[in-house]
Image 1 (cartoon, rainbow, N blue to C red):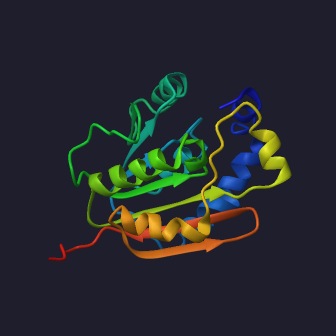
Image 2 (cartoon, rainbow, N blue to C red; image 1 turned 90 degrees about the vertical axis):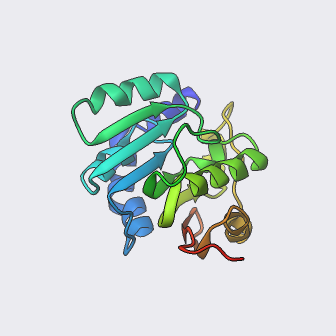
Length: 192
């Protein structure tokens, strides 16, 4: 992330947007279970909220500096921070009951790597597990905030088919002008 983005994602304005708008919209009526995976928490504002909602939370952050800061903040809590790439996670199949990602998919540098991330999330979720999240849509301000930053936008109109190709079912994608949310589940039975 560029310097502006790192600063903004730690502001009170973004904290309130996360707490009052994004998480309630994405997680309303969603049961994530007791062992949740958070992909790309950045500075951890979403992690702060999620830690109060679930029994155990594992956050995977690719940026070593951000991961170290998070690890320091969540010592002796229900949060484990793993520094690493979510396109190749070190967890066994079926480790988590639920997974989330909030406004981070556009930071994955290609659609192919985004799809690999979706397949990895599917792999580490248990049967019946839910994957929910959100991402931003293009706007002038959003594009300006991403100058000299990775920005590979995800099209909400095709995202359900990408989730399905990764092995998810019960697909729900809802788009608003500035953002979209998604929900999907891992099938409980294997189709033959």
